[in-house]
Image (tube, rainbow, N blue to C red):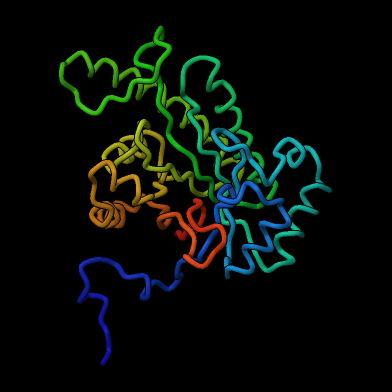
Length: 264
């Protein structure tokens, strides 16, 4: 019996001419060296890698400054990956580049340097977070506004969106100049982008290079419906998605975060 995709309520991966590949976000194995992580990935049948570069990540498996400066270091880095039949799907700089004060001061430069490194490594996708500013230019604490009542909160949101759009417009310009095709922002709470509506607000302001790094787990504890959001993202074409993180039960690293699948 033949199966028609039209019989399904949403797109099905089996009918995708470019099916998803199983990938590993290597930050999930911070106790392993770079070479050990690559060998572990091969042993698990991983095909592609996502590598943390900075921001909230301690970047356990790459030295961004060294790779930015040294062509030889980049050749050795890529050879170690490609000689094992692996490839880099994305660089990850999950960060709060728009956060106030010194605590997040390094995050903006980390995001920008990730775009530059992506060009040098030939990587087309960068994963990040939209970040969250303070509620005003004089505030020092983050302020996550999820409701516009009382009406004063509209002023807070306007300020926050102005800051966020300004940063990501500059980041998008650098990304495009660096050959990056997608900036995938994770739908994490305590961020300006955490839903389809907030994603589209930033995407409409910055451009189609902005997509969503869909993490269903965040939607579970925010009370959202990941399937509904996936359908909407298909309609809006605002996407770069990953599967829930985790390891197979038989893995010695089960319980750590790390495995992803996505349109990469």
